[in-house]
Length: 346
Ligand SMILES: Cc1cc2nc3c(=O)[nH]c(=O)nc-3n(C[C@H](O)[C@H](O)[C@H](O)COP(=O)(O)OP(=O)(O)OC[C@H]3O[C@@H](n4cnc5c(N)ncnc54)[C@H](O)[C@@H]3O)c2cc1C
Image (cartoon, rainbow, N blue to C red):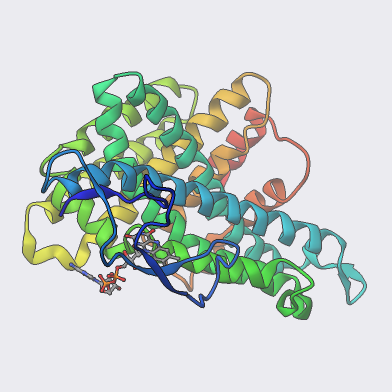
């Protein structure tokens, strides 16, 4: 496979020999056209070496995969903002709907993946800036962060969009509001620039065994863990332990083709532990500077709900969830000491 530049017009200003067969009728992303083009007799100029097209285009694909992660994170933010806005104003049974315990739980299920994606995409963006400036370690780190974010944020975007529609109630289904469009547009992230399976295989069959990119991830996350000595030891130890587990699991899957069916599990574990450490780091730094420490609560929610085993029928297990939801769904920042007290007492 090779790359070609196919100009729209020829040197004599006539149109090149291509034909747009049709514009495709898609599920979503309708403001961006997708079409089928035939290039019968078209003039094209070879870019780079013949046969190196796939290698060349993968650079563009990586950037585009990252942009899909960013798009999914932004769409989830829109979903969360819409859901919070409705929940804070819609009244049913004499109360604002945000006061109902079941609805609070639904809101948290929208908030958690949204905040995870924010932390991971900013981390990836920061890493990309360093990689573009020639930092080889950052390039290695970006090599694994990109498929992690692409896979997980794009997948999370789908239930988040559906959840936000449900919170708007019947109006969420009506095109006067944005929710139906968000649901349609969320789906493309599962396909475009590689499905979830292809991104998972990229991690376990290339980024880990060939580039050893997971080593750069461990190094970057350990540096952040070193920054957050102010966190309670037990909580920090849990973050370290889950990082070690996720890395060992991913290495095991990457080294054994018989375990390919677990590739997505390995990628999700890496993404979740990365987000948990970033959230804890962000919350600690902000809290210690006298600001909002609530992102530490999100880190604990990632640990509890995405990384540690949970008994779905253990009634008392949700006490921390309720306390965290009270703070996270509130509109006021919460200081470091209060967050740590909640973290250690429940
Ligand atoms: C809106 C839109 C715009 C697009 N724009 C472009 C574009 O500009 N340029 C371009 O080149 N492409 C574009 N695409 C194509 C897109 O990248 C592909 O459709 C996508 O990568 C999936 O490939 P496929 O359609 O060949 O599916 P297939 O590869 O046939 O996949 C079918 C199913 O099989 C699974 N599968 C395939 N291989 C494996 C495997 N080894 N292990 C496990 N499961 C596997 C996939 O996960 C998927 O679920 C676009 C797609 C969309 C929807």
